[in-house]
Length: 263
Length: 263
Image 1 (cartoon, one colour):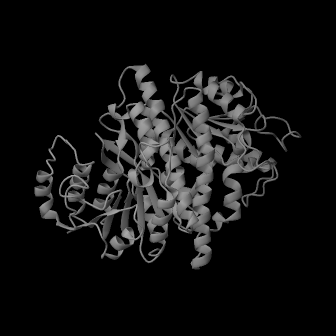
Image 2: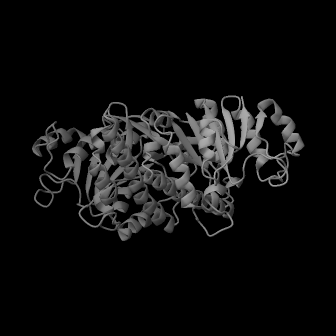
Image 3: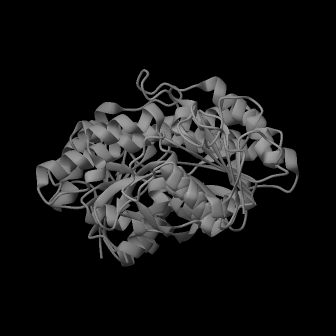
């Protein structure tokens, strides 16, 4: 089984129009997956892009639910609107995959996972496992979440993948990004790292000045590397460019161009 | 806590245009609920109407997943399209409730429940219970389901309610219909039954010629009464007209017009 993360920046321009969706890129991704389905099982997890982020930010979902009724009520409304925005992004994924004759099936992240300070504390994978048995392609997404500590929070696509990898031990986890992989420095400046052993991740995190406080000047790469380190305990991890046709196929086959983290 | 079922025929005309939605009726329902929220907790479950039924029928979802690949693949595609149609109905509910300032939150039935021959065999209510604790209004819907016996099936809104009533023991379950309640005969011909004790349900089922084989000439009322009999073990049950403003409020208060099944 292979888990594919489609980063928000791959299918959507966060700085563009509200709810813009790059149909051509997602069609290409679906077509590459169709070459390997049903021989190979897939789970897709996508991010928020221009769909979930603006609402989540506007309503300050990450601040949780306060005791004071008016602010809490405002956040509750924002919580539900953020989920609906993510369902609209998800519907476009499902439609595009079905257009390529793939039985992609929407699983609502917030119906299945509960977090504690933004990390999965509980997830019911029963439906997801049975969908895989029946040769469906479950499609999850970064979403709002009920949170044991804060009442409500955001559960990122990357966190979902870390949890799924731990529980389901996929053969491979592939992160689709809008750059060619992990760079030894800022993307475009540093050198692309094509192979990385999981033991080398810590020293790379240091070289990139990733602190535990999460200072991140390299486009979210510190967080991604941190999650990748956990995932690499169970699965091979790839970071490839989701905007370039063929790169996903290469990662699936195992001879692709990008960053490969060997177990 | 009160569970409200909004029947498909209340918010949609099954014989009308595809995906028609009676916004005015659902607005009225939301406004009546708003008069009692947050004093009272609510769960909403809605049916399919002109959204889910056409797809479910066309792809013969209830036939399950056969071994033969081509037919199974066709059904898988239909399974995912039926769910997406139900999510579109659900989005209209959420939008209308949020328009009345109610924090209605979409819970995807198929992400949470697994059936066996169409009856709930497993349901993870963790998220639903926490949503209620945090003063959200969970909104579920009749949906497709992973089925232990047939691979896939349909889970009706009424079945969901029977399961929720058993597990959560609500104070009251209110079925909104497009008629005034349960009739002693065909709607419009028989006499409206205003009060019914749960011990009287069996003899009414006999009078209505409801057989165990499910012959049903009274507009689905045999099935509804059968479920109501199970629910009445835990909760008071009301059947009221969802198209007539004020009837839902009457059932919530307890002095309404319709059919009341006392425990």
